[in-house]
Image (cartoon, rainbow, N blue to C red):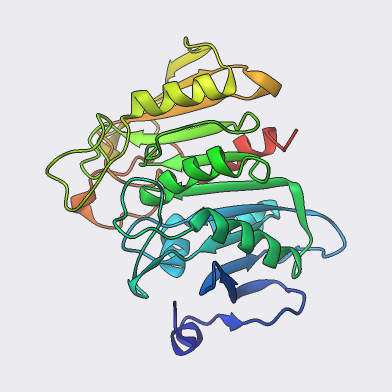
Length: 302
């Protein structure tokens, strides 16, 4: 858990159960009998009298909530569109190297589905969250966590957005259809599209991109052939990538599965600042944040 001194250095408020105001807040709770934490970004135009959409964000492995907030840049989109953002903190041996028990990449299990439910309960006492518009987004290990939430907490998660991370659980039996938007680079060496690579460090298990998409087509009742398939304009030729879009659906209750396959793309968040060059190319042809929010707006809980 992040120490209070680190929170002060980051310019965050250590909030109590008082109603939240615009800004960034470090919040603590107990989940599964252990102390946990999360960050919340409240946009400037937040009106506590109106139910407000919430996007839960789950960081990559070996990151934490503040690092993910800086990297993905969703706060800017939240300020523009008026939604709340809550960045979860996983568990680990140090505050800077946290993980999610997404089903296949942790040796030590932690109930992160229960933690997410507790986070939602806690935040509901502090902000006016619209329960029909609670969404989850994540990258890498955090994307795997989103797939687990969609399968096991579908009654509270309206739709998910996943970047550079496939499904790591054995069963996909949500209680309701959960729309999915997924982004993945063809040259992702951390979470390859072909599935778990024996060369990766540690006990690692996750499905291929093809098997992940197929699982959610079945779960949502979507046809196996895309309704739309296109090569998007090469808006920024210098980035060295092209983007192919495939949209499957409609499925049950209007659900869909939308895939953005980034040719030559690496283990990166589309449109974000370059984090580490060894992770590969970042496409500038699309903005994941814009597309994620557009997708979420189409898919409130039904």
